[in-house]
Image 1 (cartoon, helix red, strand yellow):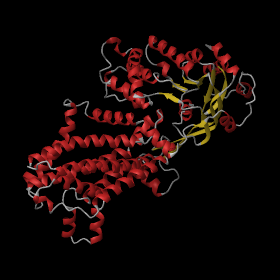
Image 2 (cartoon, each protein chain N blue to C red):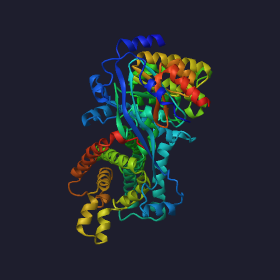
Image 3 (cartoon, one colour):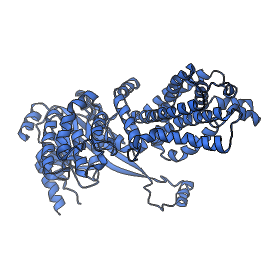
Image 4 (tube, each protein chain N blue to C red):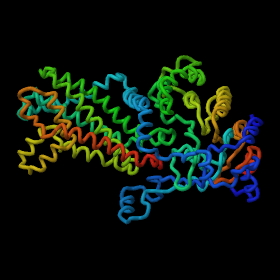
Length: 317
Length: 263
């Protein structure tokens, strides 16, 4: 392809429309005169929050769609929503309850719900983080095709995980009842615990979404970080007891039991498992509710602001 | 159509989109030309070779123009000349490396394809696509029937309640266009949408674009079909290798473009 001669170029640029006072005016002045705004500029923080709220129906619809699309090719379809956590918990029962007869001094009837609660609660945070890190980099097509506050994506993915968790909680209730734990008023505490954990997870997903959009490699690294986090949060055992047995320093015990995953797991356990045998094994760290609220606010607000700061850059390759 | 627009533009020229020396650079990971093995990649990182694993693609190089209310502007040029990229920059979807794009209201790119999910039914996709474009649930419910009718999906049976993965490519494209065209836009940009579907659907979509253009301030159309450019546009921008080669009335530019490509 050769270039067109300069003369054609020049004559064509001057449009055939009549001359007006605006001709030759610098672009910025012309834009100001007619009230045009820079396309793709980042809105102010309150305006951004308002825009995000205006898209709440999209966020909910998108998370539901992702959830149902997950199992739409399977013959059993949406039955897998419940079957997956049920099988998950059954495997733990088979290995720890039947084969290894391990109960960490709590008895099988308490240890299995103890373990399953830990696994489900941690999985909620883990899968929100994993979905969050890919929420921008894995949806570039959507980001480059449509205009919406980008925070809608990580929020939507966290919401999808919350819905997934609700199915898991159903399984957990079946296990609790099956092991002879009767519903207590304290079970109502799971509502505030889940709300706080959801806010925490959403903030985490937003932070990871921004990091993952710049450095997609993070998605490869994250599983290892998450596994380290899981082992240091007492998902499978009582954290404080295990650390005492290993003669760990006091500060380490304090630090690990104040980590958000451990806090939410402990709160959930103490709300659900109230049998006499369990009480001495589920030790809540001091100021546990303050920690739960603090982590949720820190990550929720911090993550939102952190994500918003790069709003205009998402979508750049 | 054409006459009506000349009257519009002569009465008062109100700019709706101003592009001021816009440059767009894509960064592509893993697009390096070196050997693709793990050791080779590690070697590059260790030696701190500049831009290991990253390549920059300068897709649009300093394009400036002003679009006015009532104009329908076609974008032409060979594959990879930066047409679609420029549209995305106008829509604010791709940040400009240098230069600025000023717009009146929020320009929308006609392309909900990315929001739709193949595993969902057409019905649910209409809802999801509409919400993604920023319509309210009530608006979508109001227009649901007209979207389905326009797409013609249900002409051959009740296909709208089947998952989209069971659709033929033509049916899927028709549904996508119908969803996207259901909304009214200030500045509307269409990327090769006219090439989809059978002849009857193409006619319907051309009519719909003329309608949208009446409601919208300005319409941009990217197409390789010179006929659809001639039919719908009154001004054409010719891009080549990311540079604006020519900007003028449709006839003049398309003729020069055809002369160039015929060689």
